[in-house]
Image 1 (tube, helix red, strand yellow):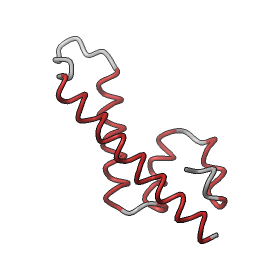
Image 2: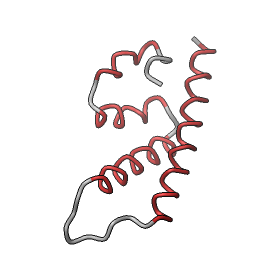
Image 3: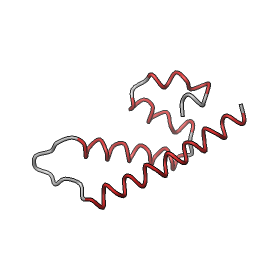
Length: 85
């Protein structure tokens, strides 16, 4: 997404946290919030927590579906940005 947005090309070298924080400037607030939540949920699920249950198959499937939806929304936003610029 950052490569498709010339004024944000420098963000591709930044940390993932910085990129997530900047999404609100380039996407609608709902999509940016969904991306931030999904990133936090996946990060939490990928780290071992000895006293917590692992995510269920339904949770993982839901997160994968949400990720696919967010990717589609980001591609559409990038295409719209490219056509304007």
